[in-house]
Length: 48
Image (cartoon, rainbow, N blue to C red; front, side):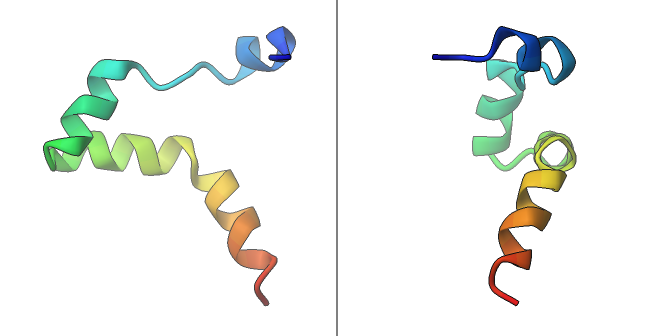
């Protein structure tokens, strides 16, 4: 079940940005990394 309240605070990355990132567009890649920065940081902290 998707938490609707969470999506209101943290919108999803538009599919057009994801597709551009897959084509190696540096601006799109930067946008995705910025969007998921908190998740990436939390995952790496588990290893140390």
